[in-house]
Length: 236
Ligand SMILES: Nc1ncnc2c1ncn2[C@@H]1O[C@H](COP(=O)(O)OP(=O)(O)OP(=O)(O)O)[C@@H](O)[C@H]1O
Image 1 (cartoon, rainbow, N blue to C red):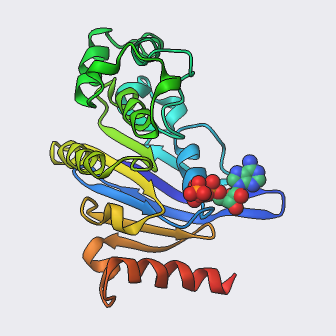
Image 2 (cartoon, protein in one colour):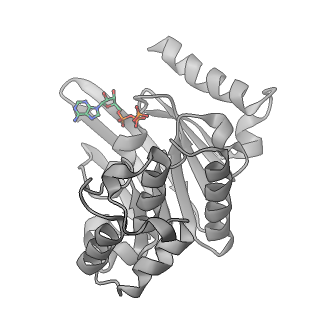
Image 3 (cartoon, helix red, strand yellow):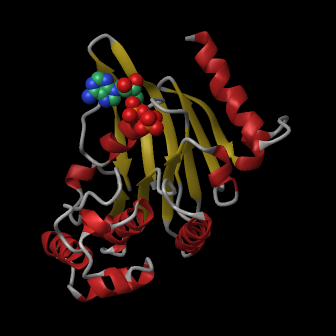
């Protein structure tokens, strides 16, 4: 389980996050939605120990990420695409991540297969398309067979077939009991995959609940998104 408890983050006088609280539960796909600059990446970076909150806590199974005994086997994450150096091959990059995380090298071939990059393992990352980079980022997240997946904008750059593929993969992970938290600025792309929605705008959570609950009273998911986020934008 991933828990965010009254997170706030200030950059000087600017409040990037204000009292952000929500949970992502095992067996469910939770979509963290909001327009550009709403605070999605800031929240996920704090969860993964890459940034500190001004106040509040972000916990993985009740513990701070930095205290996890085996982080890569607990939470697989993807922020900003693959993060791999352009001159590395996909296989080298994953082998390096596996070594750093104490994960057996056999997993490298397995995850390349799983994300559909088995034939591109020896290609340099600099030659990858945006979608291939996303697949490589996901491969790294899956290396440790983690219970939780935390993915920042995972469908960016994927073609329609790629989007269907990632939906199936994330659905399968949740159905097997895993926790999935993914961020997106596009309501439509997560509509068919998410069980729960958390909508953030201007650093504040403005809706949190099951998809049906959050979108009740709106003609469509898109309408719900714009009403929830547009309203908060207008109040700024
Ligand atoms: N290091 C920083 N210094 C100053 N302001 C920052 C810093 N990091 C983030 N912010 C601000 O915090 C707010 C939230 O940014 P964040 O990147 O978390 O949003 P986001 O929802 O992930 O948006 P996007 O979809 O564009 O990535 C923005 O106003 C951003 O400008």
